[in-house]
Image (cartoon, rainbow, N blue to C red; front, side):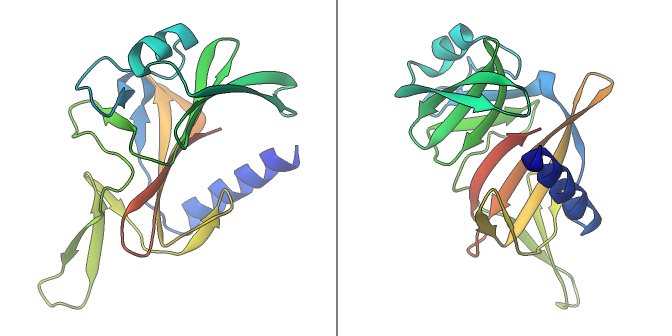
Length: 183
């Protein structure tokens, strides 16, 4: 319960602090193995579909979620973890570039990708973007990790807004170092 309250408070704090926000449809969000161009896995799909798309995980562990009062399966792919509840993908934490993320017609992105910066014509202000999203440079801590910039992208399923969001964290060198789906 404390973890849920913390995540809600953290999400509200990030939103009110001016971190970039938008909404993406989970139906168009897919995880793809780095050496492939297609054949990925979506949130809500089965563990079997995940293994067909990403290969056998290097390990599988159990995690008891007090919030859900349920035991979840966690697939390990390098430093990446994919969490399944009742055999359905419910979230992920990407920490290396073995798995990429694809959204609709956007370019794929992965750990290590840089923020793009644009300096205003007066040279007084630098704006940061990741893909087409504005990113606000405000340092903080999330999931026990220090970051220099964060992009919070709220998720929807078709027309229905969800409580889940995707969090992208950037380091002091403006490189993406964490991609997570949080609920």
